[in-house]
Image (cartoon, rainbow, N blue to C red; front, side, top):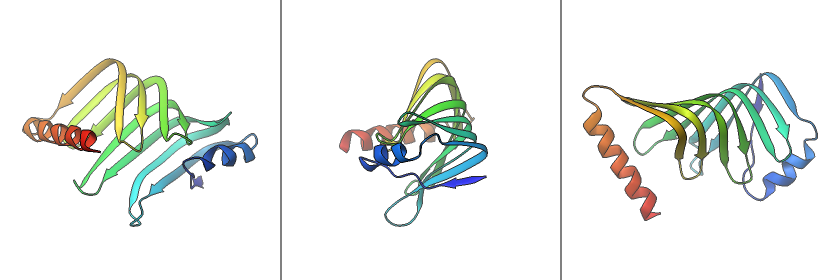
Length: 150
């Protein structure tokens, strides 16, 4: 198992360039920390390999925490590409996103880590637990309001 602290922003491209032919097999994990020291997101997976200025992820799981709402979203996929310079993960594989009271699955995706936006491209299926539909609708509405206000 290898632990990674991934730098973001403009410095990420030069950092990735220094890695050479990075390939980590047997597991990896990393995280992003907020200014207040709380974990913003965590990622772990089976394999990570550098390809150009992106990192190829295999068998990975991403957790995105919302400390204000007290919630965590889980994203799982068999493969994807992490673009550290722009803080995005993209893939053409199946994906499952789980949150409190719901699960969303589909094929092909784009994840914008800074904005906490997940886009699924096709075959989208949404499952909502009984009793949580109203709360889920409220959370989605609040999330959209936060997006438009920022």
